[in-house]
Length: 224
Ligand SMILES: Nc1ncnc2c1ncn2[C@@H]1O[C@H](COP(=O)(O)OP(=O)(O)OP(=O)(O)O)[C@@H](O)[C@H]1O
Ligand SMILES: [Mg+2]
Image 1: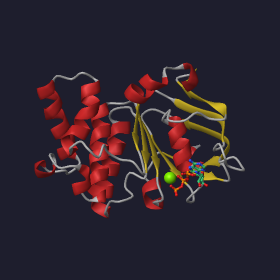
Image 2: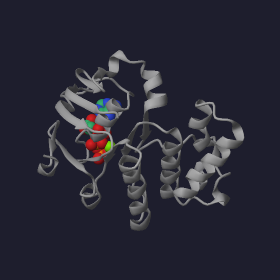
Image 3: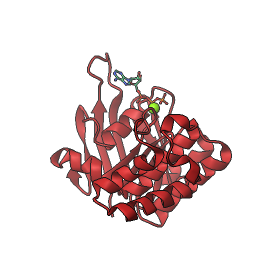
């Protein structure tokens, strides 16, 4: 079981006048969904970048099962351990929908036919029908692209799922479905699921709830 601990993390963008994160502490347990809410510009995506190993904190530590991320091979961490659903960059634009979901399976050296079957299964599970599988992402709606990104996340079989506004472009029905999938990954597959969202109703459905404000993360009392 993987536990992710954020310990007194500070972060300042190179040319920024002040820190974006000013001593963030958090525990994201395996088998649970955690949400992070906060105003636009609060630093939610920044925190997810750090958790995803896409950037490194200015000070403080991020620990995975007691071992600092910095002491790990970050390439391998990004490839094998964490799957990120990004807010701004979702999919490879020059690969088809199916190829996007095949990507993590190819990295894992899954045999071609099995990989195609698996990628197809994940796409169908998020409601992306076969006729869309061979299109380029630009030929899909924003919400459809978001669901393909989630299918790719499912195919990656990563222990940690870090999702930045995964339901931002979705209608209520699809948003509920995505939440169901993410909850299932935590509760039935023991994954560590971290969801950044503006949607309070959605945040209330998660096991742990955090709010990022003034560079610090506050936990909802329900967490206790
Ligand atoms: N590359 C960058 N260089 C300098 N400052 C940045 C950079 N990226 C983001 N920031 C600033 O850092 C702060 C936090 O940004 P971040 O993207 O983490 O916010 P957020 O909470 O995800 O907001 P939103 O809800 O709008 O997505 C903002 O004030 C933003 O302007
Ligand atoms: Mg953001």
